[in-house]
Image (tube, rainbow, N blue to C red):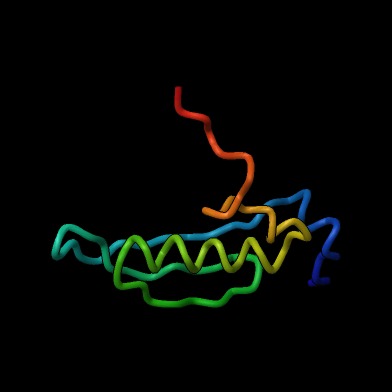
Length: 79
């Protein structure tokens, strides 16, 4: 099977299979599989899960550095 180009990958999206095995300490533990690369990794919390997804998406997009930060000048003005 031919690996899709970066441009085609951006159009297809980034695909994951998430399996939750446990819920402890008010968070989930399980396995995430990045279906496009067939890589699997255990996660120990929702924060770690979100971080793994973010890293995968950032690898496949050119605009990965466009996330908002606290230094962003486009903050909401409170009246």
